[in-house]
Length: 339
Image 1 (cartoon, rainbow, N blue to C red):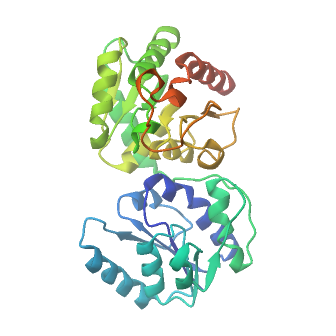
Image 2: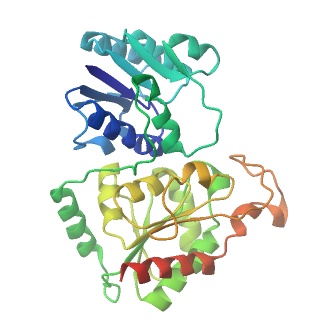
Image 3: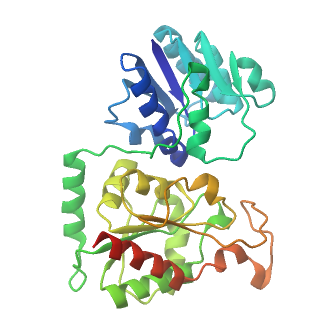
């Protein structure tokens, strides 16, 4: 059997589909299992023992030409089953053009008609369980599995050497606490002054290194944080997602807004604290809480939009309701458990 799994876009969502390929490998040990997705995001699937081949989709290319290029590759491979875990028009078309005999995907409008087995999910569930539901047409009924990213020994060694090289005088503590202070959507960003206060608590009370990871789109958030913080910290732009994953794996705890690095952190086994405002942690933080992972969230009225429409003091009230001291308390719980 030849199976294609596709989550075409969004890095964190690609990480959240790794339980699907794990379950498929267990249920169909002799199958060829390939994965199609965004060319950056799928680098996090490298070295995954459950996959035979990774097919990168280049969103920087001409849309029509890239769809035709990918469709040609897929048709030549003659898949028996193709599973679309994204469900937007582009992914539905690509899966249809693959020519797979069995095509599984969400029953979203006209896209549902492109699949031989359209899926309807009415219950509220975690993102991981939602993806696993797409395996039911194959006779597979599976509940939660933890997402995983497989790092090599060399990647971890390189991260250790890098972190050792950037440790500054007076800030060489082996206890590293990581931050991700940006997010795709402005409404999901905890205020810079809150991250700054948390950094000060960590340095003053734990004598730990604070590592702030960021990407090219997070520069404005880094500048705001730098202006607000009075504690020492080290800013790191990892350049690649796999290096980011390796650096996060060397942190004792990682604190992140509701964004891809949060999922990367849990997938490499680092205790993770996710900060949620308009996001929904019961869906997007599908991890066992209270031991090594915490979703910080306040149950207050919220629009659940990507851009907060409130003004003045009310702006980002759902994010501002989460106090730095509460997050610091969660860090202490994690560290005390680990020790």
